[in-house]
Structures are given as C-alpha cells and as structure tokens.
Image (cartoon, rainbow, N blue to C red; front, side):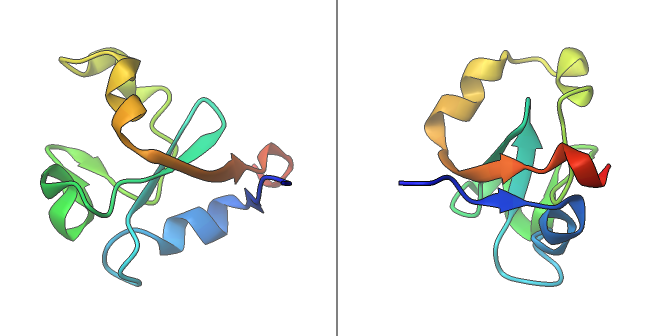
Length: 81
C-alpha cells in the first residue's frame, strides 16, 4: 500500500480548528493525534497542531517515543517547503 503524501498546507488544515482532525508532523511522518486528550483544540502546551514539530521536540520533556502511541497517516511533502 502506498503512503499518502501531504503538503504543509494540507497539514496546516488539520489543526483542530479548521477541521476535526488534529495532525502533527515529525521527521517527515504525519501523525494523527486527534484522540489524544493532550491535543484538545489543537494545542499541546505551547505547541500547535497542523505543523512540523521536528525542531520543537528538542525542548520537550519527553522523547520522540511519544509518537509511537499514534498512527502514521502519511508523509510530509518536503518539496512544498
């Protein structure tokens, strides 16, 4: 099965405000965090959904293993950066 590829603009729409889906990207993968109570309304502490959080994770109190809880729903298209 081919993995879906989403642009940054498509990711940005899944911010918990414009649509019900709440997605974040990390290291090129897009994760669906909609079911997480920590991402209600598209915000998790000072981080906002619909964005690539790769650079922001280094300031988080947890490791990238936190993403293991969530489904990868696609890849981020880096050609549209």
